[in-house]
Image 1 (cartoon, rainbow, N blue to C red):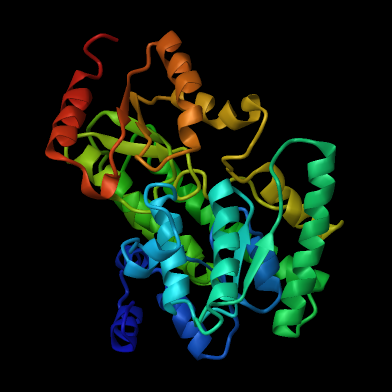
Image 2 (image 1 turned 135 degrees about the vertical axis):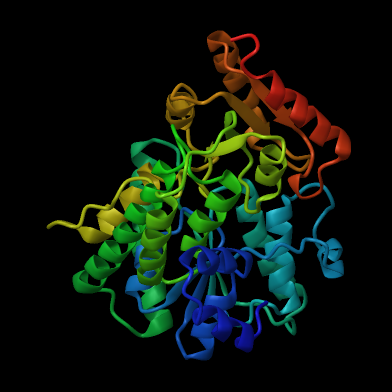
Length: 388
């Protein structure tokens, strides 16, 4: 966690690229600062929690992204090799007291692992009431495409609104929702500018882009928009990058290890099929007349990437469209603990094979790739184009 002096020095710097990258590498800094200033901070574990609703309640929303999954206490409660490293790290931060600055930890039912995270934290609280755990809340919205799921999700969103009002003591009215929607839509536009600078003539590496885009979930979105717009203007003046254009699909990447490994071999990562990178913005939320809370819910129900999206034609639509749009090759990332994205791999691999699009599978943890894996990545990158 960043020291107050380091945070102050950072804020005095003017380079927007440097500042956004720092926030990406120090994801809790702004949230801790907000809590110290008396603002309730609501931690979020995934992209399917409605940011705008949290913001409209007067709280500071922040995605929780600790990267230490090796804390000794974790093994006392969680089985090794069952949970994703990201989920283990969040659990470890919660039970160690590192998340005491949170007024609430919001966990959506986006995946089975997040649901179990909620249950495990509740059980730790029951077994060891002296532990300094943050209050937890389950946002039980499902992503199956059915009338029943949609109706149930809207109902749970109304319940979340009531819980946030109770937390902050502020009524969430249409004026507050509209302000939050417009603030967030501005950030989405800034993200799309960065995404556009990656594609057909990329002017930014994937390693750099992931930090600039990912910072949007750690800072206030007014500040993010201002910094990201300036960053996009600076990057737009660069010359295009050479190298085979790759897209990463599979498990979500909340770090830059795989991007670095691919780009060290001469490739350029131009897209990710997950919510940390290319798909983080999606469509804007309608800010006209009508039911604003429903519009917010529909954004997260219909437009947010989710491993529980079903049926397959909805889950695969973005992947299929992007893989045919100037991509030279696809890298599937399925680390050892993956238990979700691997089910999509055979179907998506067949889609690529039928169209002659090269692909490569990484089965190691991208934070510590072996030399053998790095060599195979290099061979894959150099092979692209030889048979097409």
